[in-house]
Image (cartoon, rainbow, N blue to C red):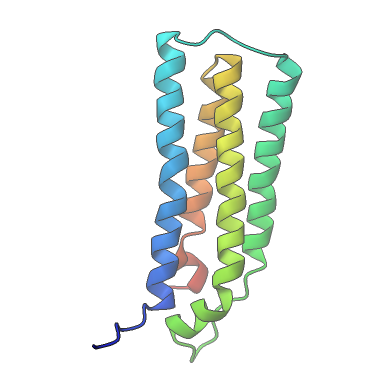
Length: 139
């Protein structure tokens, strides 16, 4: 039986990036539809909603700081070699950004407002576009 060819670390990074980027956007869209239809009345303490948004945005900021600490690709380094050493740090950065997006979405759901999820999803989409695998690795 033939062994399958190993998956390229650069390809894995692209797949994981998309897999982490899509769920919060879908979640935010569902929340926007539910809140716009008025299915859920506001629930809980508004201070908890503010705290969720604050923690969510802080997680996105922390993910950004982790992403800035990913070392650049050297001149003669192949993309697979680069992603072999940089992949764990990139996944941590993307996961922190994703977690922050989910928290802002939950805050919007609990508060019954579109303002929180819109802030979170716009920030998340901008960060995921800004820190995509091609930009991190320099092309």
